[in-house]
Length: 609
Ligand code: NDP
Figure 1: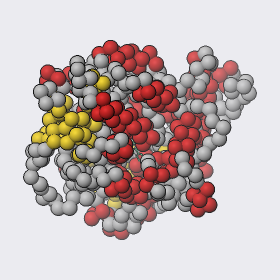
Figure 2 (figure 1 turned 90 degrees about the horizontal axis):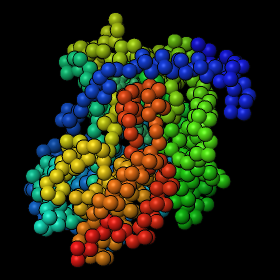
Figure 3 (figure 1 turned 60 degrees about the vertical axis):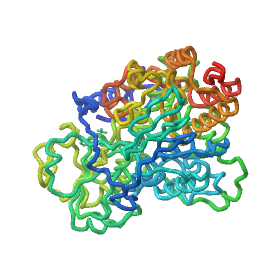
Figure 4 (figure 1 turned 90 degrees about the vertical axis):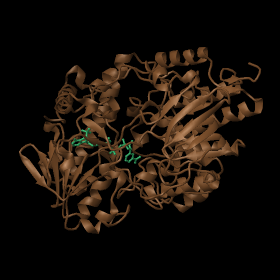
């Protein structure tokens, strides 16, 4: 099918009525065909958890790490030592709270950046807006897009700066939270036999913390080395996160998956392995990266308040808002119009819906045509180039950015294996990966197959939460979450959630987390000041917020149903309801500020009650 065909049909004109140079109906048909090739009846059930199999922590000081169980009490327990937890700790310290215990499953702070050390790891959100608290720590990243190790070290620096290592419990997973009405405290149980108590608990256990594996038949029978990208085995590959995987020089490697992680890993595997088979089911869109060192002249020009200004500017643009200038000016901000599908805002609300949808679709086709043309420009083998082209709307999959990924497929030792017609890798034997008629003999299989993406462990069986009267949060939310602003629920006093939950979202997740952390710290500080008995939303305030979410949440069902399957659309079976605040993050943050200045009366239960 040609994407450059000119059409004079009504659907073949732009919003301004000009010929498009492509046939939208033909593209729609191609997208449907490619989606249908990938839909699996088992949906999300095709995956399984990796618990225990890939659980080792690269930073464990000693594999037999042990400590006596704790039986003490703190004012605030923060569950999770990634950026959500660190920011909560930092903002609480700034609010004057001294008695804080950070509890983290890994051996140090960093969250996803602690566990993920794969070669090539970088953050593809600009470092000057992604890394939080840069001005507070007096730090400026070395690159526009920071390597994972720099981000991990920044997380540790936040821990030191705000004295969060004091009393921290690493290598510790919270297994249960139980509210004790008599003492008005939470009892916290852990996998290390701890029984702690805390007046307040903030849960920030992350959304990318559970690696997942495809349930490929025979996966346990493989006799070579195998691991998930989030638990990279440098003993086996040699090298480190900057590359130099010297021990792979005589190894044949299969990499399963072609998402944002694989796009960063493949150039290293291609350069250093004897042979790499990249097992692709759905190609990612791969846009220009353009990483560069921080310009000293620019860094000297920065004035106090610069990071807030830059973050606000980025958030406004990627949320579809109007700004006079684009400070970050990269692939995210350039594609911002398209991002509204993921992070909706009110910008186009004046247009009739069908018109809006038409304009968005045309812009989307144009963007994706550019990205497909980029594949043709870079990849020499025609069949490989065709297989690497993404046929779906831009925000159906998380976009990726690289200036070396597509180029890697021009190497003679790199083979792209298209598994789409087989639902992915079909079978694994003791020495091979099987797709269709072909058995690819390999020494090592690396799974770049992602994570259980969702809200923090409270909704999974990993962390059970028992509120007032013993009711569990899972029961309480069985018909969907019920919160005030996504932070707190009635009958679960003094408990705060961080992460995506009945609130607003953005690709710059650390910005969202920082606003959440400021909010939690402000509420706790006010509760302390007033000597409040509990922080707990009234049933009315909670019901009102759930109703607000229901009325503002964008209806993304049609868009997601037409998307190729992935975690963004629940593997092709989109949920009927979105739990996102539809007015977008800017409006949500303003709403929180306004609510705080109005007195917080619908969560602070005074001592006299
Ligand atoms: P993803 O979930 O995005 O990708 C998983 C990949 O595995 C997909 O390509 C999927 O194919 C493939 N796959 C799954 N099962 C099979 C199978 N049976 N056979 C063949 N292929 C299979 O995981 P990632 O680790 O790449 O990324 C996860 C998230 O981490 C990202 O979305 C992003 O939020 C974050 N991230 C952020 C980065 C950053 O720079 N900020 C960098 C890296 C990751 P299919 O698409 O067909 O399902």
